[in-house]
Length: 134
Image (cartoon, rainbow, N blue to C red; front, side):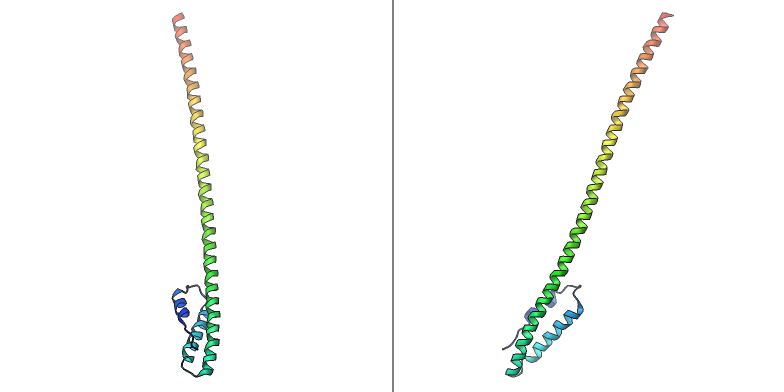
């Protein structure tokens, strides 16, 4: 029985830079052991079957580790995205509050200006009536 180490070679290409070097070293040693045992007799075939099972365990461990790393990355990205979303929502709320405040100030200024115009008009009318009475 021979054991193919194709999954290990494909996993070697997929490995993430964050994968623990120790685990990857074990996988490479297991791969070397499998390649070294392929040309021996039937006793070595038993060893290669054991190595294949070990390789599968290492493949599974490597994949699980990669999944954990990618989940952590995804969780960090989601947390950062949520943080940015909250900051954007807060900024939008502040901008809307500022706009409303400016609109209120503008309407208050208009009301006050109309009031002063009315007072000035009444004063002018009064002054005209006083001048005509003289």
